[in-house]
Image (cartoon, rainbow, N blue to C red):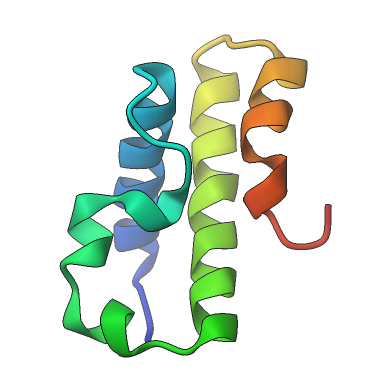
Length: 83
């Protein structure tokens, strides 16, 4: 499964909004991601890498919006590979 940079940006913003409004726990819960056939067929490692990319983008968006670094990292750190 491959996502374009624009798709990652869009999903990252959607995840950031979901975190802000307390509607989402994980990027894997994004309706627009779950509905994709290629997501459903993706392997575990592939999904983990995509979730990490989406969480990184959400982290960037939330920090840009002025949210505290500590809170943002607490919310997304479980989903970012390498942290």
